[in-house]
Image 1 (cartoon, helix red, strand yellow):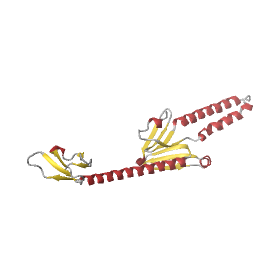
Image 2 (cartoon, rainbow, N blue to C red):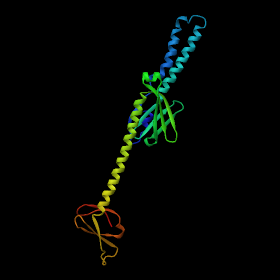
Image 3 (cartoon, rainbow, N blue to C red):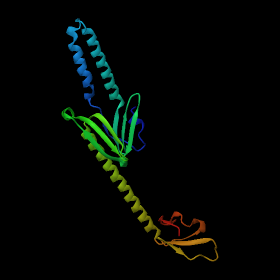
Image 4 (cartoon, one colour):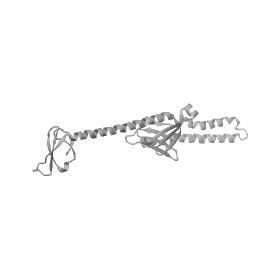
Length: 223
């Protein structure tokens, strides 16, 4: 299982995943082509040595690109932006949506033609993380901004619901009326439910508790 999947929180889900572009294998492909072009002259003086050098370079570049491919992860979730790269020496970036300031996309000529580029993640406090050779970087930036905007709207909605709930709770408090205490019963308070007119008696330590009317089930706070 990937690093991103292993580190998701219980209510977190992946919205979009970025991938490295196949262009990272181009340098190895170029040296492979040069190596093969030397095969006709391999019997000539120095031809075998030059062929071996180019072949070794091809293998090193191919292995490096392969390790970069399998060790780089980039994802946008409904809560964070997560990036992990490095095979032996691992580096991870995990920014919550409110910590992300912007995304930068840098594309050269080949990047625009083959749709890849360097994606820069700018966090609060001046933190900048460039990730090169990302496939479809503009799409990643778009999906990340949509996820961040959606998360901010969801948080605003939750705050609004909590405020509305608090208002309704205050309105429920007005549905109960404190009555004068009975002198014959010291330490016992009385209140009347204004919805069903039920009179209730309760000990002083019950003051301020959230209860329901035993008759109409109306919720309120004991005065």
